[in-house]
Image (cartoon, helix red, strand yellow):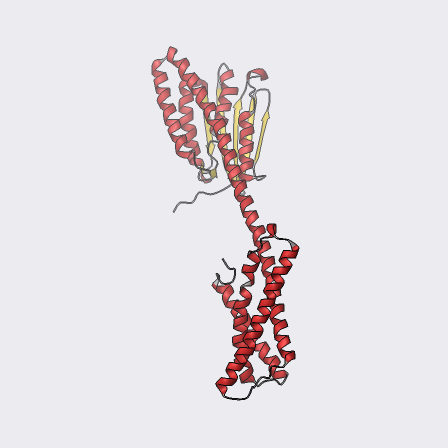
Length: 355
């Protein structure tokens, strides 16, 4: 689309600028004592408006010579030829329009078009069109740069989405395999518990399917997902597993990536609670402060590091997901002591709004 003709505001500014150009031409004719004001304006304004449409065609000339397929010699030849045609066209219009006005007024030529004045009209038409070619060429160059930046941004977005899908595909089966192993173990011990756990697992994955395609969900939805997950795990561990949630009311509507808290609870159980004879309590603290959402998960661990050390895949995935979504505007850190493991994360607080 033409950058001037396709935009009403630009078009109006463009036409007004050319009208002022016509007035300037009339002023020069009067100053040079070549015509009176009435004839000068009657001559120059239509000529200027014609020049505006003639000059706008320079955009299409530039478009016909893409930067990546042009040579300097070809561009010089085409631009010079186009400017030459423009200069001749503008000169012909000036000469013809002057004759029409003289005949219409039934007078001797009011504006005497001397050879010097005709040359001046030609040079003016040539120079103005050449400047228009250069201006549109610069505009197209910047437009190409903006388009390249848009394509690059779209590519980064697609790459980020692809990365998130890969990370999710690593997280989701992790819990599924553990749960199926637990169901298999319960089948031989307690068939009723195994059946109950299967139903609870189905409910959990039904909810994960509902949020799988979302980039962000509310913290409240994530907490509900965690409750369904814990319903499965409590069947397996019974009183050995305890969980305490301390969630600030103003944090529940925060927008967060789905399934960032559930894998942390899974790790706390797998690498902490499971290895303790008496089990323990997982403490989850969530609050909002200074437009940052803070989440902390704390769980007891065995004094023997060999019994409670994982491969770090879940935490690595969490960091990668945060980087893909927030860049450097998110933080994940963890600390282990002899009998305790604490993970803390902070991410920009994004509010969920309801209509």
